[in-house]
Image (cartoon, rainbow over all chains, first blue to last red; front, side, top):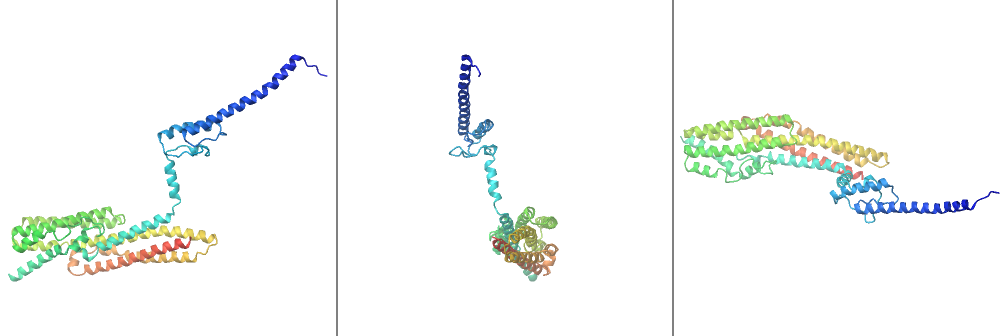
Length: 139
Length: 258
C-alpha cells in the first residue's frame, strides 16, 4: 500500500484545483479574443466578424479598416457582421469594378457584336444618303 | 454677242441653281449626309446676294464676288470631306489615301482658279472662269458622292468582318447545343442564311471603291460618270439590305438556341 503524506495530499488537491483555473483562463482568453475580433470587425465595417476566426484574420480585418476609412462606400457592411471572413472580404477599392466586370461577364457577347454591326449599317445608310444625287449642290 | 450672253447666263444659271437647290446642299452639308457637318454652306442664303448682284449687272466686281463665294463654299465642303475621310473607321488605308489625294488636288485646283478670278479684269474671262468652278471640279456631283459611296462600300466590308466573328460565335453555340441533344436545325438554317446574305452584300460592294475612285470630272461632263455612280449607289443599297437581312438572321439564330 502506498503511503501518502498530508503534504502530498495537499499538493494533489492543489493540482486538482489548478486544472479548472487553467481551463477557465483558456476559456476567458478565447472569449476575449473572440470578442475583440468581433469588435474589430464591427468597427471596421468589413464584415469580418466570425468569433471562431484566428487572430491573423482579426489583424487582417483591422488592417483593412484603414482602407475602408479611406475609401468609404466601396463595400457595404453586412448588418449581422457574420459574413464569411477572409482576404476577399476586404474593403478593396476595386470591389465595385470587379462587380461591374462580373456583371459584364454575364452579358452576351453577341449583343455587342450585333450592336457594332448595327452601327456600321447606320454608317452605310448615311453614306448612301450622302452619295445621292440630291447632294449635288446645284452643279 | 447674243450667243455669248446666252452662254453666260446659262453658266450663271448653273451656278445659281446651286443656290436654289438648297435641299441638295443641305444634304451634302448636314449630318444626314454621311456625317458631313458643315460640308458646305447650306440653304438658300448662300451666295444669294452675290448672284443677285450679277443678275443686276455683270461687272468684274460682281462676278468676282460671286465666283469667290462659290469657291469658298467648296473649300468648306473639301475641309469637311477631308475630316470625314480622316475620321472614318471603315475606310481602308488605300481608299482613304486615294480620296485624300483627290480632295487635295481639287482644293489645289480651286485655289488656283480663285487666284485667276481674283486677278481677272475681263468680264468675259470671268464668266468662263465661273463656269469652270462647277465643270472642272464637280465637287458636289462627283467628289462628295465618291467619298460617301466609297466610305459606304468599305463599311460593308467592315461589316463582313464583324459578321465573321458573329458566325464563329453562333457556330460554337450550335455545336454546344447539338452536343447537349438540342434540335439545332432552325438555328443552323438561320446561320446559313446569314452567311449567304453577307456573301451577297460583300460581292456587291467589293468592286465599288475601285470603280468610283477612277471617275473624273471630265467623265461626269461626258455623261459617263453619273450613271456609274447611280449604279454604285443602287448596289450599295442592295448590299445594305443584304446586311440587314443577315443581321436579322443572326438574331433569329440566337433566339432559336435559347
